[in-house]
View 1 (cartoon, each protein chain N blue to C red):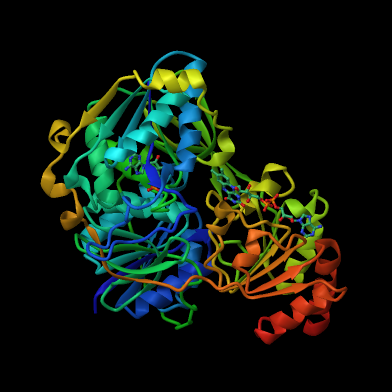
View 2: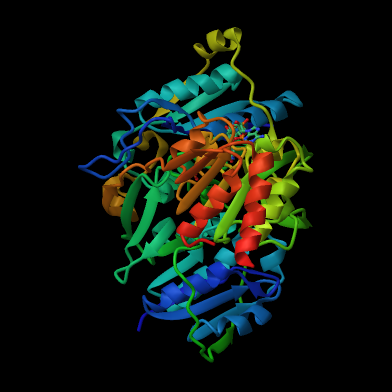
Length: 259
Length: 317
Ligand SMILES: Cc1cc2nc3c(=O)[nH]c(=O)nc-3n(C[C@H](O)[C@H](O)[C@H](O)COP(=O)(O)OP(=O)(O)OC[C@H]3O[C@@H](n4cnc5c(N)ncnc54)[C@H](O)[C@@H]3O)c2cc1C
Ligand SMILES: Nc1ncnc2c1ncn2[C@@H]1O[C@H](COP(=O)(O)O)[C@@H](O)[C@H]1O
């Protein structure tokens, strides 16, 4: 079973994240970056499925030069090879355009499963699996807290608001995972050393057959008109319990007209 | 007046409050039309008339319930082609966002998710980076598709007698690629839905075990609130996963969020920090949750919370 895992590099959620004043896009250059946390679970799930049978795990990332660091991390966890789509023309692409670009690269790869995270911590849109399923015509198995592969079928437990759905499809399929699914491994020293010599293919938009007019900020189907930084939330009143703590909270709620 | 399509979110014929909010919002943008799909749609169609739609489009095609997301997006795409609406509004929950995503690709349109407001010019307001930045965005291509968060507008009734139109949809093989073979209900019933509740009371690792969650539930019931939990509590099996609030759980934005025995990890904050008022009860004065609390009480939850519940019950008479 060959698996492609989508991995995104995102600003560290602990860091202060900003939009740039000039083009109103995310400032990716001046912050600490990490692998999108849930994508580690996606990589882990792919490795587990591979280890139970055979095949290759390929990492696919669209992002600037420095996203190579994140790709290396995924390789050091045990993925076999990687494809990095990087091109200045892609800067400022929105989710719909990103799905177009990723789908173009996917046309050049052979896979039985595509696994991605349920949500990127920067965009927080949780739609990549749906977008790619629509573009590729492959089944959407999103929000999985459990994945079972049997023969040519994939079955997931999809978390819903009041329980879960069991959803089934034939491979090749597109799966997104939530963090309940597994416990990602840490890269071993051996893994880190091995990652340095694993194949990494870098593609420009021309290499991938992506039309320049379809991607990038100027062509984006959704656009930021303006933005305003809001003053950070101020810590309020902190009171120590002196035996009447419950009443103190009730008084506060009453003063706010909540009760 | 331009037609605005609103996808109604309903559970077997009972519309969720978010649907009424969107119909109310749609009336400020143009002529509202409701789209009601799946099992129970006819029943739900009768109920939405109270919120002023001029038309209701209905389909109960079996595919809408039998397959994940694709068929719903297909019906909406067909309506977009037939009716040329000025915009499509969809409730911003996990499924709603995925329907919106597929619809955007099907119709070659731009998509905005998690709006907290939409202006008459169809400019959407979004709050990003945990509410630190307010963004105004618009769709530049195709039909604006906008998902709107629950609790963004107050639902206002406006009785109408909408024209009801049955939609006959055709589905491609790709729309029917992911089959829903079983739906399992795990959540505890009887309390407001977490995503829509105006008050949420959540418990964390500080609760100690599953039984102690009854302390949080009692407080929630005194306030008419939904119950949430941190990942530490859901992972321990103390409360159902569906009630997890945070980055990989539900995102809530209630009037009041009460965090009980929760430290306030960044992944938890991601799901609750745009709440209007935040109250934290924690015995550790250094707990990061106090950094964003409007009111923090440093104390033992096992004495503070029952006292609070009693006090609220008393005040409510
Ligand atoms: C990929 C990923 C996704 C995640 N997604 C989520 C998510 O969606 N939601 C989420 O919540 N977390 C999520 N987490 C986990 C998160 O990092 C924290 O581990 C988790 O939120 C901690 O839960 P907690 O605050 O209940 O526990 P702790 O951090 O252990 O805090 C317990 C608190 O209870 C207090 N306490 C203990 N006893 C008492 C008492 N008797 N009275 C008063 N206070 C008491 C303690 O002082 C402490 O502050 C995620 C993590 C990862 C890696
Ligand atoms: N630029 C990208 N490159 C690779 N994977 C991505 C990219 N953007 C999003 N993804 C994947 O899509 C998932 C969901 O992202 P989103 O829909 O943006 O919240 C992430 O967890 C990643 O697995």
